[in-house]
Length: 140
Figure 1 (cartoon, rainbow, N blue to C red):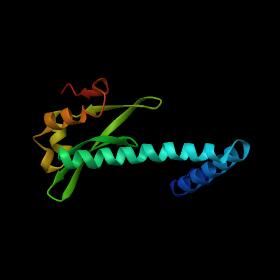
Figure 2 (cartoon, helix red, strand yellow; figure 1 turned 135 degrees about the vertical axis):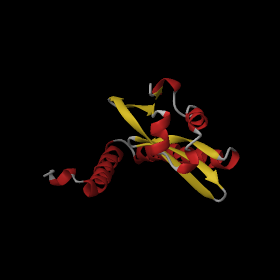
Figure 3 (tube, helix red, strand yellow; figure 1 turned 60 degrees about the vertical axis):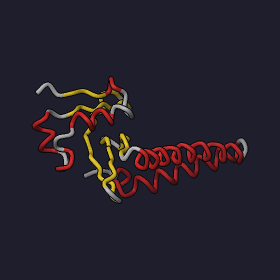
C-alpha cells in the first residue's frame, strides 16, 4: 500500500501548500515585490501558452501540441469542436521526453478514426512544436 502523502488526491493540495509557504517566506525575507515578480512571470508563461494554442486553432485549424505529463496532445478544429489525439511519450532521461511514433499498423489501431490515414501530416505538424531529434519512427 502506498504511503498516505503519495496518494494522488493529496499531491495537489500539498504542493500548493508548500508553494504558498515558500512564497510567503521569500516575501518575508526579501520583499513582497519579489513574489509578485515571480508570480507575474509564471502567469505570463501560462497565458502565452494558452494564447498560442488558441491562435493556432483559429488561424491554422490545428495546434501542433504540447506535452501533458507523459503524453503529447495534438489538437484540431472540426467545425466548432476541438478533436485531440494523444501519443505516448517516453522519458528517456531525467526530465527529457521523446516521442516514438508507432508503425502504420499500430497507428491505425491506436488513434481515433479521423487520424487513421494522416500519420505523416500529423507528425509533420507535431514537428513544428517538438524538436525533430525528439521524434522517432518505428522500424516496423
